Image (cartoon, rainbow, N blue to C red):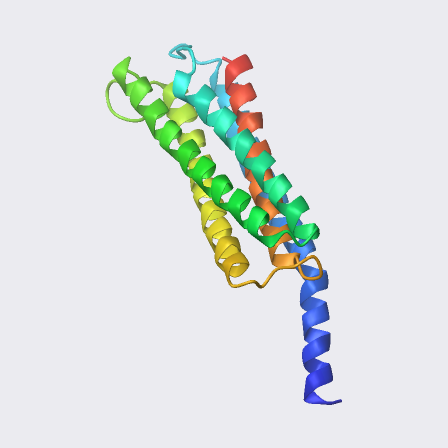
Amino acid sequence: MSEQSLKEELKVAKRKSAKPMLWISMISMVMFFAGLTSAYVVSMNREDWVTFDLPQAFYISTVLIVLSSVTLFFSQKLLKKDNIQASFTLLLITLVLGLGFVWYQYVGFNELKAVGLYFTGPESTVSTSFIIGITFMHILHLLAGIIVLLVVIYNHFKKKYSSADMLGFELGAIFWHFVDVLWIYLFFFFYFIR
């Protein structure tokens, strides 16, 4: 077997395993957040449980992350049509919306502090510790998504993607949409289960 054919076989194997590996990692993340939200539900029976409204900034951040998925979706559609420049522009908008999401999560944490709800310390409550902790864990996953998005942007800028070769873009998009859906789940979970 020649070195060239071996390289081609490895490339094909990598392409075949990339998406299943991503799905497995996302399933483990779902299990992680399912465990956290289950603990939240169980803890609601405590006598010291405090209910409160979600910060307004969380509503804004939810809109921003949904919009980021929309722009990424259209960026991918345009890439499939080899409209590279428009696809790249929407990819940059996706990044800005993702960073806006992180900013408004930070603003939301400060809104909680402003009304006397803290993550830790003598003024903290179990419910605020859960909400801030779970939200912070989501932000860590979103920051991983932003790193993935930056890699996709870099590769897109270097013209590594086209309608014929979109695997890296697709993997990044799948992860970004996953993080988006995960936040929507968490947002509605916190909104309805208090």
